[in-house]
Length: 120
Image (cartoon, rainbow, N blue to C red):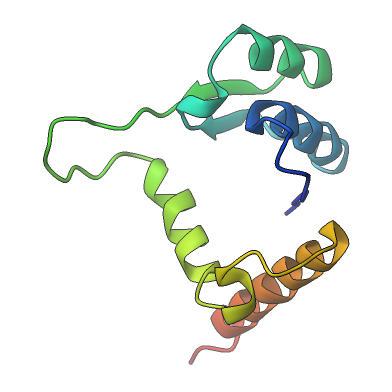
């Protein structure tokens, strides 16, 4: 759908608001956003209310019970990141320019989608 690569000194919650601002312009029908605990708090909520009011943000928290528990909706993001990290170029931060990192992220996503579309 959309990705933004930014400098390490920008908090995830600030980058999330920026991402949703660009994403909501392309997909105005989005109604629900699942996010992890890094996006909780009043600053992200205020930014989301300013950028796209119709989106309902649901924070999916980890279970700290000491055993493995499959959490609803959280595994989707973790699985996608794991699939993208299979690409050697994305497994480490080798790129000096953000636009190069974004280009390789898009190529890896295209590779995943093509593989899914071409399966028999």
